[in-house]
Length: 79
Image (tube, rainbow, N blue to C red; front, side, top):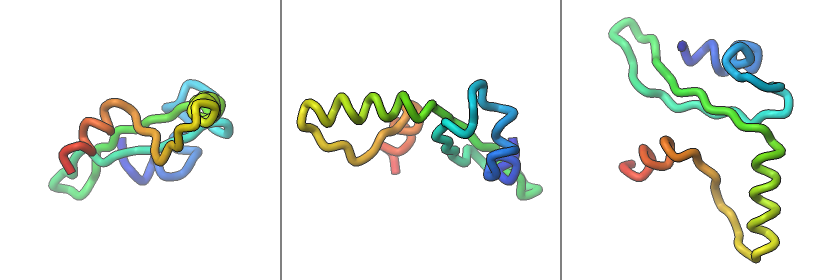
């Protein structure tokens, strides 16, 4: 997958199995090729899933600064 195909919602739309307009989308660069192309990891979730999690934490009195998927959290721990 090329990064420039994913940055606009219409390019990402073909990779996401649910409505893109009700989604939160992010990507991370995995590597760059000699020709300058990039491989990326695309992730998406439904906005309602995030809203439900935020509401749950709000009810418990916890403040959330970030939500990350497992694989991104693992990679980010080394940066």
